[in-house]
Length: 152
Image (cartoon, rainbow, N blue to C red; front, side, top):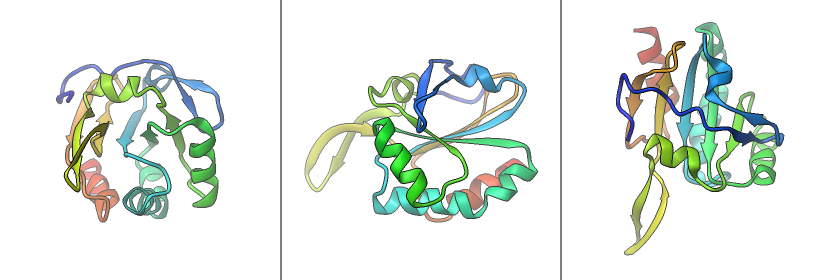
């Protein structure tokens, strides 16, 4: 997993609208990049909706929010529309961005092992470096946790 001070990856990925985007496009701005395992599942929906509900707080701080999961563009678009999410979702279908951030790895659930996204959040500073890392994120309350960090 990337650590504070590392340069954020600038791989090009597709958004929920099918447009290509890179973190390089956001140089000069602070960006919250949060990784979640799968769109429209209970924990991921809780996390996304809390960020949505607190979105004005991120905007007041000038923070761009990007949600990233390995879902395809169509699933991301459906998730964004269904829950009226006011921020961009990234379709990291081949998990290149997750691997670059170091959040793609072995997971265990109900005795089964599989590869997947480890729920985590990174604050990317205007110069493209990682300013803060939230590992092993709990969806409920995470938006407030990030806002408190950003305000500190």
